[in-house]
Image 1 (cartoon, rainbow, N blue to C red):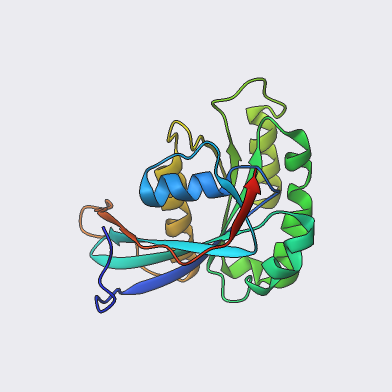
Image 2 (cartoon, helix red, strand yellow):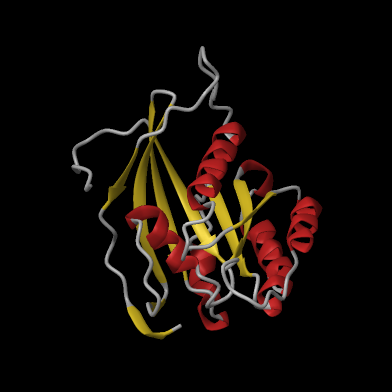
Amino acid sequence: MALAASEKTDLTFKILTIGESGVGKTCLLLRYTDNKFVKNHLTTIGIDFKAKILHILGKSIKLKIWDTAGQERFRNITQQYYKGADGIILVFDVTDRSSFEKVSEWMLQIKNYTQIDKIGIILLGNKVDLEPRDVKPNEGEELAKLYNIKYFETSAFSNYRIDESFLALTEEIMQKKNIDLKDNGGTFNINERNIDNHENKKKSCC
């Protein structure tokens, strides 16, 4: 459901999805915001964004989720968009070990271009529906522990743990911003709505 431009939200968080090309960042975003999976989508060129509204504990939170190109030649574009980021989703493909090994480079970039201790960060091992795996679950968990961030294994195809991971990131952002997450019952009351996506530019199959 599209959100009327005049409708007010209590909070707006800028979230970046980063990682190597082909790890499934766009598929994750489409699954989360539109609940659809596009098998042969086009590779993102530059930056595109979609957004979603969460209602958590009486707060209306707009997530503006930026889908960044993972190709090396577009990293200079990606760097511009670190400014003002509240949260980052770092994605690798569990069937592509090289994308896992590049996580350290992405984390270095996060450290260089953000106030890393003031933003929420989660690590996603995507495409767990596929075989064979090149990265074991414990490897993703250990790497996340090294950086003191949360780790989730996900599948955009089967919608496995997508909502859970975005919610965890939102909670992490709120904690970093010292926004009270507790109510009398100590539980979340979540109602999600989509917002139309920004214009994007695509080319070639990923």
